Length: 452
Image (cartoon, rainbow, N blue to C red; front, side, top):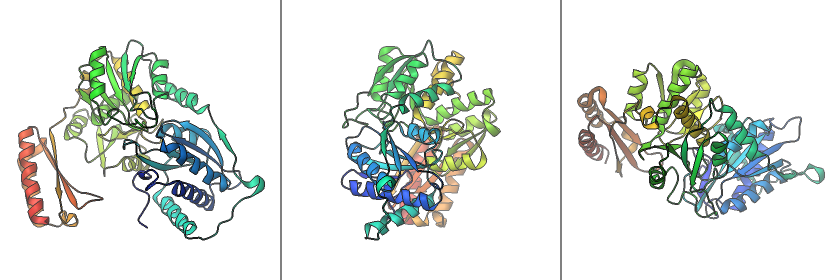
């Protein structure tokens, strides 16, 4: 059996890859592993379980809840809420475990399971590995001690989670949003209720699109992966800005009043300056991945802020933040982590903080986002090559060095082997798009010849 856990939980096509049996088995295994680790010692264990609106989430939720209760864990079922809400409630309610059922920005047929440890933090890799091992033992017939009588878990709906999470979001805001007209695209996803409620209670005039989930329409032509509807709606309604989430609302992308996209790098830049002004940007440092636009790096240098770069993936950003006690980090894709107020990316929180900065400064989002210039970026996937030799090929190394000399300080080259396919990603940034395309094409040819 290959590794089930990826960089963000277990995902697959619901009822094909991700079955009810798998969901139940993983939940039982998670309960056993946490019990072995001493998490439940001295008290009756509890878990928070939430989901996004996908139709498959209904039966997967039932399977997860059954598995946990059969292992002696009391379950608080919070219903349809964003991933960051489940993480927050896991910590706020003192639960031993949190479980979120979502495939984030993936299409509706997919679903996923993500586990949170006590406090709402992602499980460590070694715990995920142990859960897989225990699941496999149970799957192959190894017996386990099943509680009976009063030892089985009890299940209850926790309806207060919605209001509790919204209250948390509002408590974080540095100022209110009166005077702003904001369009929210909820991707027909998990934030369709809480996000409009939070923005309205913060004082904004709110127009919603993509906020009528029916279990089948999540991420369908809307949300942070499809900004066309949001751009049109912002211009049509004469809004100050637009905010887009993905299916589980751990991402936020934005649109300014002209309909122009404001990506995760630009949002990070705006929030970094706001937090420095407020004295909450510890170490005057922002954490981002190596895929962040070079324009972001140059802007941070110009503003006197430090930039720490990690491997691609919000989990690596979070690891660096926790290790060094940094307050702000994120990805170009819109995962933004404000660690003082969230243990994971929180799209609603990010959108609120971005809108609060617009309201506080009286400056349009387009002007605030202008703190950085997005340099042209070209990405080419070179398929069917030996990706293991990217760092050892002398021919490729010489070609990269030559490209970097030609690009100078306003350009950048990044070669990334794919984690799942036999391909190498060639990314080139330059001040001029034609130069970026030319250099990327030349390097792609070298990758093909040197590694093919």
